[in-house]
Length: 471
Image (cartoon, rainbow, N blue to C red):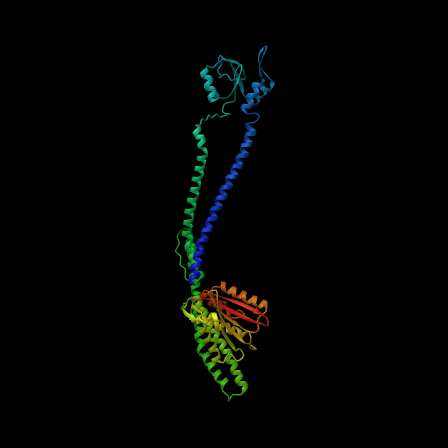
């Protein structure tokens, strides 16, 4: 039992780790998805802005259009229709500053635009892309400097200058930011994992205790307090029910034992009394046989109750299996139970010294139940073969009869054993077709770290094999 508990607790920690690792990976995948979506949105927005503001109709295209449409004719400077249309469409204006700084030509220039510029003013206007607070864009021509201005507030100019060393360091800075982001992510994950484990750990321990029939009491704080109180309350209810069931089984066993012993005694005396008529003696023998079945059932209920509720922990000792099996077979012969079911015992050469570490009383009960199962399902009589062998560190106790079971019957029996293994109580599983016999054999084998195997072939026999670890 304790080994099973440690196994579950040992598995729970990796399970929690896997759970939180999955959550971290999910978070990382979500973060990556967000980055991909953000990049996609940036691409769409950039493409849209490029179409809207950086292709046709941008300050650069307007300035180029004006430059191409502006020419000096015989009557002076002339602006073609295409250039004028571009300026009018954007509410823009244009001036041409000659080499002396004077405005040689203008189109729609506001009154607050200077009529001449000094070299310093030209340099400052070009640097800040601004003339009299109007956003301005410049185009160098052979005959002067063309400036195209737009309404105030339509464009914002920003000039950036970076050292070459800074530009070279950009990949490193991006990698540094990525590493810091990962560090923050891992720190948040580790803190969240530790906090959740502290909160969930006691709950998992309490559920382990409940699954093993032990009391669980939780005194949690915060958001999980209500859950802790519910588990504690459920544990108290289960404990009360378990105690009531165990007390009922003990009481019934105690109340049945004395009258049953008297019935068996009188039935045995009548069956052996040669003065009694033959049919009366046969009926007395039948009463005795049925009484023995009731006695076996009471014993099974007591044993199952003790295993379920740890009323009597395993008394581990070195048990020589050949001696134990000889005692069981001899007991059956001395009790006169083998008239229709003679027992044969065979100990393989390699198992002559087979010893297991276990509770001799429970192992004896398991063998008795396997033999009783053979008698129960072969009422017409058959030979029952008990064999002991050893292989791969295991002792194999095999009890085989002569009738066998159909494949569907064997499948139903194995399904019943599987259900009993997941049930919390072996005693609570009583009431199905085959009683507690093989269920208890399986429970005892598993309590010793072993298992059982069933084999059957119609007409050739049914076998129960109990596998126990050798000491």
